[in-house]
Length: 167
Image (cartoon, rainbow, N blue to C red; front, side):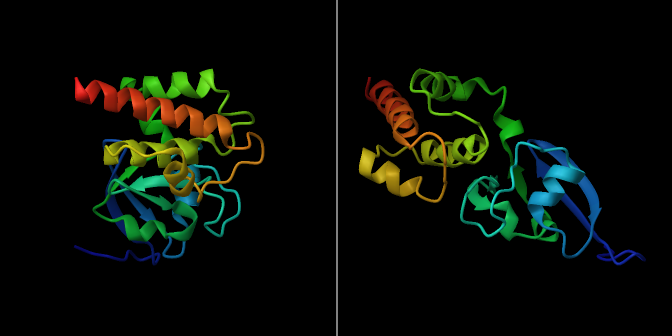
């Protein structure tokens, strides 16, 4: 397999939202920029470009990562999930409804990063109390909601999912 082409680009093949993608990328292209501009995943927002705000959070091999801190070339043979990949997934209808109920979003800029982080928390299938949730979500910043609605929404979903599991 040829790693570099004549233009000094890197060939990568990966799975994006359950679709196999093969592309050439510049060696120093940030994953966040690649997802937005080369793959059309514009829900991956870029805020601070230092990995602090969490707006660019995606799932990389089922783990939340900051896409602004990773190079596109590093995703070869990996699985990527962005907000577009869960947009119509009925598995998260309860989370969407809870977000509406508790007004957990306002401007929406941070919401995709929060939603992806919350999905990783829900995938752990662990009951977290409010203090634990605040710690788990501390890597995602929001300037609008004050976090209360987000914590209430996630808490409700976790409680409902765990009460169903006990039945």
